[in-house]
Image (tube, rainbow, N blue to C red; front, top):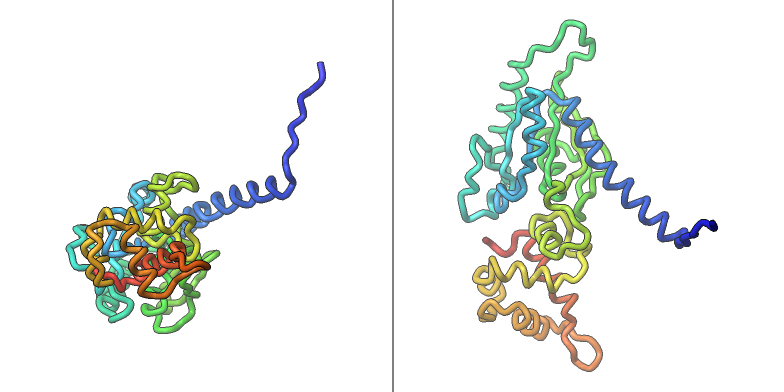
Length: 275
């Protein structure tokens, strides 16, 4: 009997393999940070703190008897109480809470008794969280330098960085990771959630008008107020009106929905639209 042969494009095969490697790489680095660290800081956007919590990772940290410090970043952008117990409110923009966090790290570090055979004798503090949650910016404020690389694109940090907080405390920066329960490359609802939480930037997401439609279901009042456009919750009307106002037109005077939608997502992700 002859064997059935399946033919695949070598380019497509390489692309699939690269995607698999990337998906495997980041969780592996995250687990390494947790394993190395004595204290773990989980950075959460204060606007979406509960949605951004990685419960699976939090449980793992507890199982390993590590100290977990939840941080609510971008406190200046939130108009509501995130409701995370024992969390420290932080704003990298206004520097709110930075001293409190630095003091908290030092207090917890003193409680940790390093084993006598540990010649390195350093306290490691891992910084974890969703992509683009502000981990690197937070580290830079803590150490008072711009040592941790930062970028506007989600997933900018590609590897573990070790940075000195004090003579015996090292901070570990790592790539942001989207929880498995949130991750999808096809589910539009999950992709919209990635974008809302900053896991995908406005420039990376496909079909941005669909994400705008999802945001309008939850934040239509705030979005319409920001643009001064009474769209009555209709995302198509919002995009059409805003596109005309901005002059985002294609040939024939047709509204460039993609460009207009990405502007809305950009304003939302950068916190210009208060929620």
